[in-house]
Length: 570
Image 1 (cartoon, helix red, strand yellow):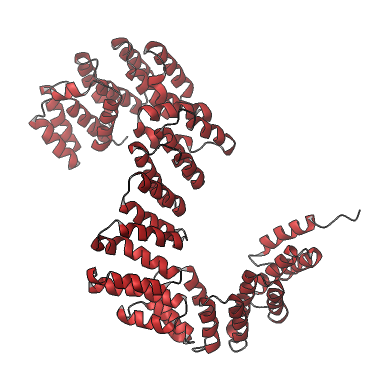
Image 2 (cartoon, helix red, strand yellow; image 1 turned 30 degrees about the vertical axis):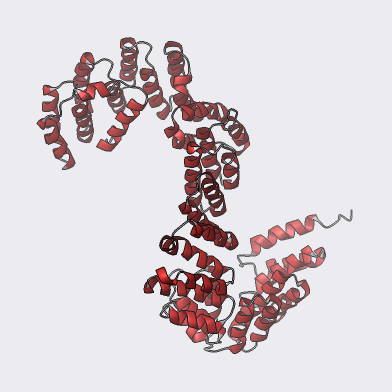
């Protein structure tokens, strides 16, 4: 068992938190030169010498808790934990009420595997310190961790009888019930435990996370039971995030009255939601926190979360609100970047240009260049190549991705291929373009550039036609271009044109990589339009013709569903 100083410090802090009489003993514990020497030797992994120094410190002050814990650590490293027991016995005889010494004795016996010794030490402890909850709590926790749940249950019952009721044992009961799979009683006990000691919230989440799906509603009801309070709902919010239900987590938390404790819970929930990539839920929590305590920092974070979650309009609005509460210099470095990204995403680069001009007086040349690149992306997205070039020129022309898109729109496939490949972590739309560019050796194609430019300008139907029109001249990527056309027609709701495109691939390009997809998507359109027998034929064709395709499992599921809708003739 490896024990370090930090772990033992946490044990001491926990003991203090549970009401153990440690502080008074420590105040009289003179830190001797021997102890300091032992600590230094321990940090240098000279455990034999450290043990000798700690023993010297204990010879000077037999009840020195710091020296005893140091000796516990180094003896554990040396495999000599049994040598600590006589010293602990002597110190406990002098200070029978010092919980940390008793706990060290229990830990040492546990590390030695001496279950009978642990039981005897527990009995002596409860005898020497009657009506104290500490012996029951310490022993029960160890038993629970080691899987002796029945024995732990007995110990807790003894503690509730001897130490005045079960409230003081809520934490141990919660752990025990969770270990025994009694999820609803565990949640009730955790509710009490975190209400008394809010720092136990993470322990509650860890213990209740394995709750089976069928029992989770009972756990939810137990944690949200009236009277409503912040610590249990904080646990519930974190649990919902862990269970993959972030919106339900925020629903549980947002009912709280907005006081200081609630504000902390909301901001903590937002942090957890961000870690889980639940961006829009994090946004909502931060907006609520700002309403309770107006803080521009909350709004800036909320704006960034909104943008990450696909809510560009919300991000722009939140960033604008933050800007009104900040001076120009602070706004320029915090709210302005996300505001410009949001406007760029929304296809509103002209609004972004006006906003950037308003901040020109407080921006450095580097910031001006950085933000000009954001605007360049906005112009690229709406297909305004002249303004995109101007913005790139203003930024120093250092954005390969934006330059790559401009090259693509102009039909310069070689330039686009080179510049887009240079991106270290390309986004999904860039990956799709790279996949197409890598399928053809062509260096130029004005029709393909025009197709992408038309798509950027928002005309999906025209872009679909343009991609199909570009296919004959780019035969090495022809099937992919026709498939892109079919996907756009599907997105536009034009089923006949989509089917025509998929049919072209199946009939004319049956050996192409897109042929299995064409069969599957053609069948799906047929199913949606209630042409079930035809859909079945297409799915069977896929399974028979392309048995090695990764799409076969999907085709089998679709086929099973299609057959279930065919009326029986018997």
